Length: 89
Image (cartoon, rainbow, N blue to C red; front, top):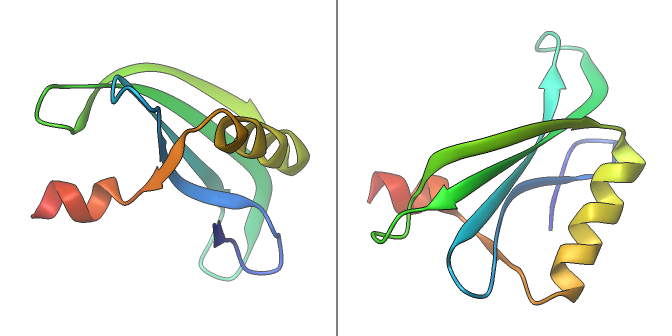
């Protein structure tokens, strides 16, 4: 799991076992020196090429909610995936 410095919270992409949905976990960066503790969870539809291209929704959450959702998805067979690397390939 990717970690935010000193926050111990997930960042990155999870993909569902059927390759239909992807969820992006991120945090709000206020400045380069200071980070907010507000996190976002974005849901995307995955197109046949395997890329998350259809934005569906955004949820603003706390660090604890973000970590809870991340762990629930992993326990439901979602997997980490580097869509950013996949999209540039």
